[in-house]
Length: 334
Image (cartoon, rainbow, N blue to C red; front, side):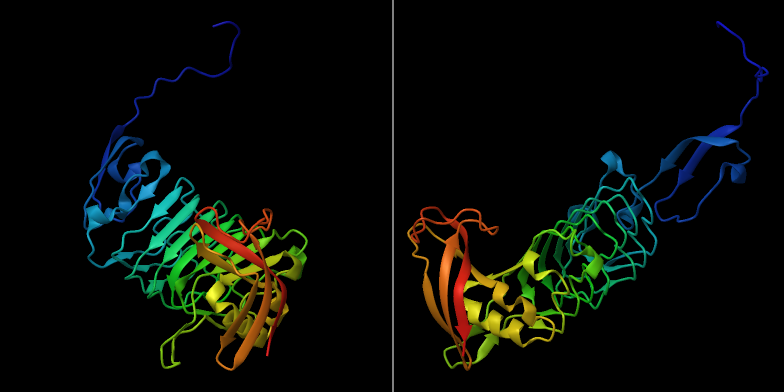
């Protein structure tokens, strides 16, 4: 060694040993509990009956339905509380409940919640995940969970295939969200789903909502399926100039009427415009008359090949299979 140090030489024999943890053992052990200075090895045994203690291999957690089966499974409260090395969550279909704060303030980036048996999500189970960017949900039996993603400030895209309702303040305060698909399986929207406080208006990104649920009427005129019911301020208090609402072409009139009638939602009425899944050779209408119960709507449409309206179509005859979006140049309902 070149130079000198004032650290005295020490030669201490540390007491080391192995900690063995069973998968169903939720206790926390310190080296001192075993008369040791530190553990030099930790062995964890796994069990398919309780797979949630698996080490985060590759910084991902994947709950495999093939591994755990489809028996009812409950994720306990605080299970991954503040686990910043948790990067992705894939839930198996057998999950029935997720406990309070189970995934609070983790490092998760992507959430897949495809759980037909899920009925309960505890308070703050997914809140404050500040790195969460994309959300995929198919949970048709999930009961009321308000403020579900409050504090998840980096979410930019959400795909909601099925829920009984988009619950209150589900994406409240998330000014960066740019895109949300709301599937056929969503029958209602509670109040303030996408609420933004006025101080966030300037920072808010352009936000596109795609509704997929259609109004279906049988041969006798009975409504078999309606467009989503909307509570007051369902869309929230987002800036009108930065909000775009895309709905199925065959239900355009029904959506425009529904939004125009809702307290706090009427400000978005002029933003409701159609999209369609088209095949090669389909002719997209540039004018349209459509009825919804006692209402008759008349519309003039201009078609684009993208939801941001960057690429206008030079012909209304479809040349490539895909999804096409229209602007409503003129429209009214009587």
